[in-house]
Amino acid sequence: MKISKHLPGLPLERTLGVISGRWKGVLISVLLTGPKRLSELEKHIPSLSQKVLIQQLRALEEHGVVYRKAGADDARRVDYALTPLGMSLESLIAQMRQWGEHHAEELDDTDRLLPCDAVVRPDIGSP
Image (tube, rainbow, N blue to C red; front, side, top):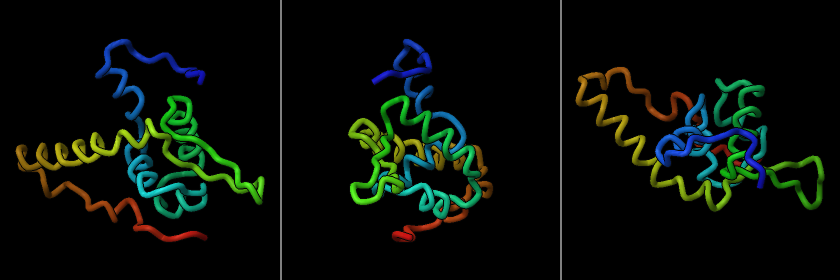
């Protein structure tokens, strides 16, 4: 697997380099529920433009976190899913969410926290 973007040598900075960026954490969270088509991802995260969605999916793919799978019966159908490496982020994403809540509580800033459904629609099923 070729990774086109150079990542920092420090493990912590490498992790941040892979998962930081607008919407990457949200995309990983949505894909933790299972493979999704591009149109499903757009429905789950309606405020995310298609351009940014594709950019972030490509970046995650370059880093071995996401893969694209063409449909066996329809070559036009493409599903995006987490690789085993991407699935290994599940506990880290959950811990980051918890730490974000803790941080807001410590700084008395919980009124600015958004519920997940303010950004991500719940599982909508297949189109």
